[in-house]
Length: 150
Image (cartoon, rainbow, N blue to C red; front, side):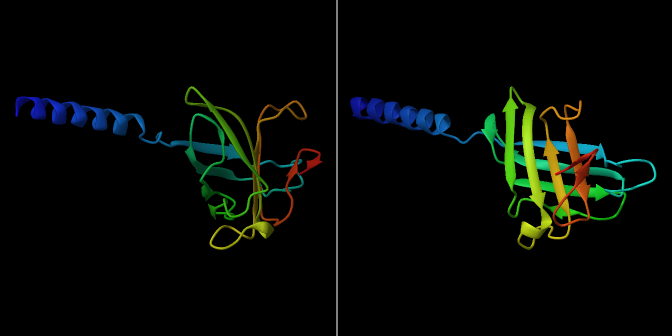
């Protein structure tokens, strides 16, 4: 009987060890805020405004966000979810830091209940001297960043 108890105790430890090793990694969420781009002081291409939101469901390495949501926009448009049918959705997390990303969600391509009447984008690649670009516009199909139309 003592041998049987030892065997079950040993098996129980092995099962617990395997269960702990195969638990999924926890998702990492990032909050964001940016001042929406104005092409020049006399032309409010993207309507200006301060934008806040959250990127959810990232993990270490490169992958897609499960949710990108605009929580507030002082210009008053584009609130809601943007992972309906994004054109690009790639985020790289290294040691818990967001180091590279590209996300384009043209509202016209989204499916309800995601935002269908605004466009949101984030890009970390170097362009026009900026190392980070983000914007939201009430246009369903394009957004202007400086002199680039994305």
